[in-house]
Image 1 (cartoon, rainbow, N blue to C red):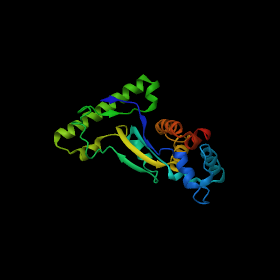
Image 2: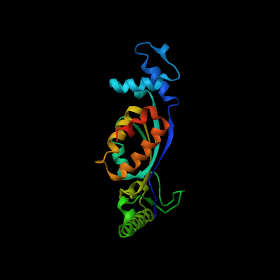
Image 3: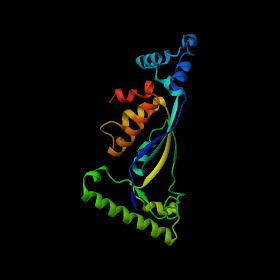
Length: 208
């Protein structure tokens, strides 16, 4: 049993996204002749001011999240996105090449400041791991044994969205009303996206 921290990495983002958005947006009025090396930022600001957010959908980004199953269930509620997730149906954690029999879990955030809660989490997750391993040894298939895994088990999920949907995701999932674990990974995602394309995706930082 191993406790790990959540993480987010940028897999891919539309190259020259601002230029792509401007070229697409200027198609409406055939004003491509106004494009200059500096015009993209001004154009994006105008789109935001006028509420023409659909043009932002021409650029996309893919992020890889390492989080727990509970948080991933909230992520996939965002419909305008594509997902590929680590499958508990097919991954046999007893034979996992990344550490057979040693299942990874992400503990509640409160454990970081409470040794007593951390010890409880370690004990609970170790029991869950033993139950899963015993189930596999008894002949349960991975898709059957996964019923014994808790929400805290680690999962890996790649999420791809257009820029408009990423801004929507960040607005909802970094909000104080969001689950604390979700706010952690959403904040990581937002920082990566804002760094990759500050002109468009840096907006989420301004809205905090």
